[in-house]
Length: 291
Image (tube, helix red, strand yellow):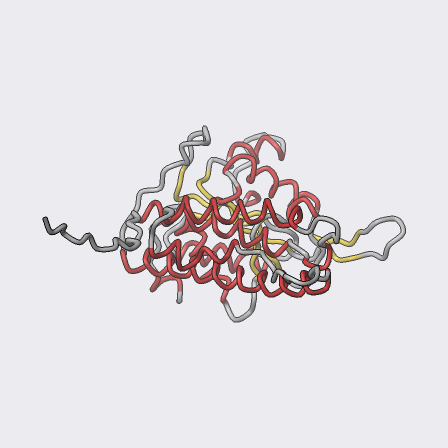
């Protein structure tokens, strides 16, 4: 009897909904931050594998959750988790060689993750779907008005107004605390009253100076701005908060894990902000973004 030959079944393209792609982008951006924080020069000589074990697993887990483990996309980007180095059969690989190899793997990982994010953003844009924003199922959010965006700001009114007017052009309602009625409330009560928003933009401007006792003074954002940044991260989730940074100022180490964007004169921040909104499910008119 002649047996029928069975052909090799290769990987298949990932089938993702717009919502799944939108959820994947913040996930992959978080892995980018983890890779950026990795310093090859600090890898110990006695156990270099321990320095990359969790990073490898974190990236691989994110790619599998995003694309599946037997897809064209996973095979294309899986090298983002390959923090390895050459093995010498005749002598031990030196620490210098290991660190040089890991530095190259770090850049390769950043390039692949950036490409994966870019592809997802392009697919979302091409889909052109109007997705109704819904709160993440893992978070028990309070009742929110999703078209309202809270704008946290410092003393500099220029960046604040630029952000607020841009949000209006995109069809959102910017909420600026000092423009709201006091209603006999204290500042914190007023803040809580008007914080029923679906997204927050934090404008970090160099309004204050400060530093450790034995170090020089550095430009900083106002303390209340940092406090409100933390409030909205806790209330909405990190993925619904976009930090826009003006100029060269020191950022608290506790917030370096969030994505922030330079509020540049050329206006690239407008596209970055729109991408953050799209990533959590908002429908954005890109023609209005570019005006």
